[in-house]
Image (cartoon, rainbow, N blue to C red; front, side, top):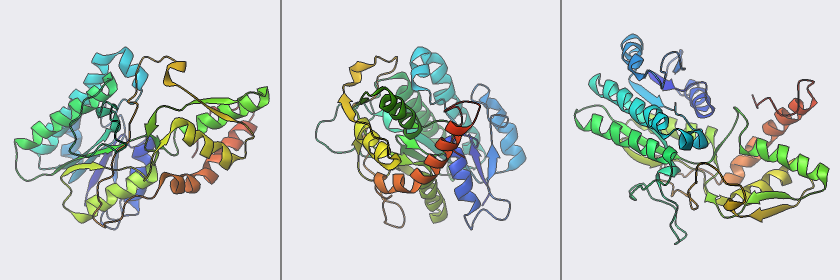
Length: 313
């Protein structure tokens, strides 16, 4: 199976590439990496040339503008990159009989749910910020493109609160903030009224490989690790694994005003995978990730160039 991955040098894209390289169905050459050279969100029409050249059977669309505050400051640009560009890619895939998996987000939901349940795949989206609106526009554009043709499959794979190797993620940032607070003899203040599904990129990548291996994967999938947490809950887990002696204090989201307002309840209800096995709990995923994170973080702290400018490899 010839599989191309957009955003192949991003956090999730790199995990998907690694998982596909280990998959038995991609052949000795592995997956086809499409970085910005091959698929530029600001010039999406270039995908026609790359589809004709690489002849993929499936495209996993990981590329996105995920700077949620940037999206709030420039909503038109967010819509172009996450909405229009996804639609252009979907039209080319549908026209050429290429299956497509579009990666989307929990932020397509408004977060106002109060029943303690995660958002299901068939719940009605209602984004409350420009990032979520742009990603939902991409979902809808892709569906329109594939409704006009028969044969190729479209899957929407929503995920949330991704962590893993790449540019500094939430665990990395919490480590830096925790050490700074501990040095100052202060508590670490972290948002305690925003809930989500912390999710390891490697687990999402494995789930995507499982869907592809099944052969039939059309539909909407929620790919998240099990359980949920507040940002403060997650921070406590991180500092405990790192052995940083600092108290984590819950504060409201309003403590730090931001251009973008995240959904307060951003929890997704996982959808079943072909194996019937759900993704493991987020705490188990953190246990796997923590050793590599801590090694990379401490190496960066010890490097002469500065404390936290580097990222896990």
